[in-house]
Image (cartoon, rainbow, N blue to C red; front, side, top):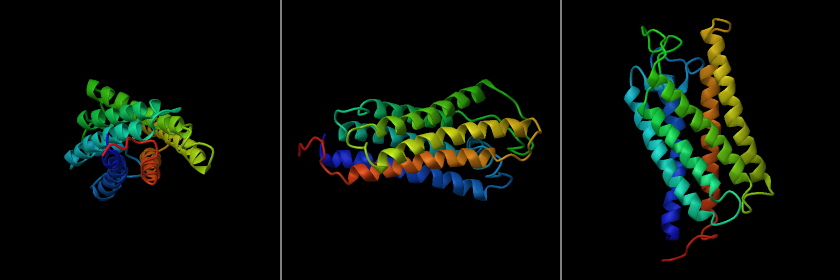
Amino acid sequence: MTSRTVSVLLTCGIAAGVLVPVLLWGDGATRPWYSLWRHGVSQLGTGERAWLQTINFVLGGLLLVAFAVGIRHALRGGRGATGGPILLAAAAVGLVVAGLVPTDPALGYPPGMPAVITAAGRVHQMAGLVLFAALSAAAYVLAGHPSQSGHAWARYSRLSGTGVIVFAVAAGIAFRLDGAGIWRPAPAGLLEHLSLLTGFCWIIALGVRLLRRPGSGWNRTP
């Protein structure tokens, strides 16, 4: 694979890192009855303008797959050179499935829809679990690659991996507290948005970092 092709694949990751959170925050901030504070990210895949987030998740996932391939060729050998891309590809699959299989109505959104639990909703939850877990694990694994470790970058990568999973777990707890009427409205939506934002900012930073190392360990075939 040529250096130019690898650069294009890495740029796909940066594009995904910008596209997914920008569309999520922009749509959430402007959609009637949706609360960025309360409602989950996945609920933007239901109700009005649901098609927008379906496209966002699927396209973002495909871009992440390309990014994973680019990383595999950019980091040839060493710890994490295989595991990191595999985890990113798993996160991408979770994102695509989450886009194609909508979640169940919850916490009053979409308006007028009763809160139910369906088989499709469970599939969506599993896809979300894969997305957050794999994204967090990828940040840890790639922090240990010889070309990435030993400096502030490795610490930032591990901190990002921790932030992704901590925010996601906190969002799940807040969601259940809200549903049970114990804390209403709880910041489940804000926490989930922060989890994804943390992960995608790390993806952007990783892509930029690798692009600034042109030809380092890449196949230089013209």
